[in-house]
Amino acid sequence: MPGSSCLGADAAAVPAGRRRRRRRAYHRWLVDTFGAYADRLLLVGDPGSGVDLDAMLAELRLDRGHGFVATQIPTSRVAVCLRSTTSTSTRTWSLCEELDITVALHAGYGSEQCEFIDKINEIKRDMEAAGRTDCSPSS
Image 1 (spheres, rainbow, N blue to C red):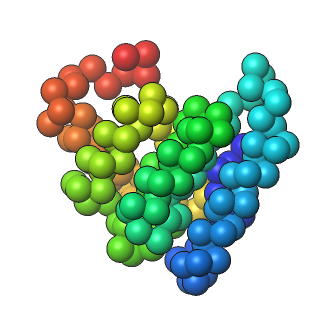
Image 2 (image 1 turned 180 degrees about the horizontal axis):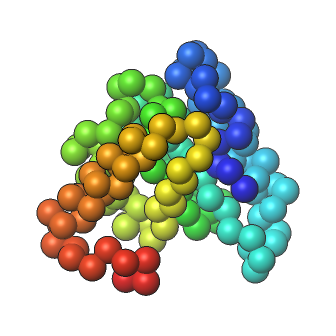
Image 3 (image 1 turned 45 degrees about the vertical axis):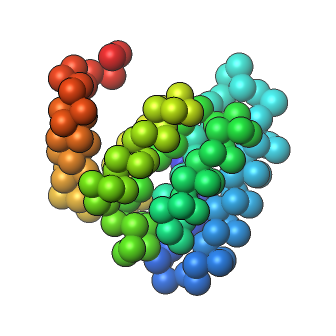
C-alpha cells in the first residue's frame, strides 16, 4: 500500500493546508479500512508531506498512535523547506527510534534514481555518525 497515493507527484504545488488535510484523511482512511487487519497488514504512513518539520513529526506521532508500524522517509515530494538536512534527518530518525517505528524506503512514485541513491548514502552517513556500523535490514 503506498503511503502517498493521495498526494501525487505534484504535492509541492498543492497549497499547504490542503496537503495536510489530504495526508491526514488518507492516513485515517488506511486505519479505518485496514486497521482491523493488523495481524496481516502493516500500516505505513507518509507524514513527509508536512508543511514544516514540526507538523510532519506531529503527524508521525498521530500515525503511531493509530497503529502505524512504519513511515516513509521525507523525499523530493516534500515542500522545499523540508528537503533533507542534517537537522531534519536527526529529528526524524530520533522520533522514529523513540516511537519504535520502522523507516521504509520506496524507490518508486516517480523519484529520480539519483535522488534515491543520494538519500540512501545520506542515511548511511547519518547511521555511521550515530555509531551504527551494521546497516543490514536485520540489525
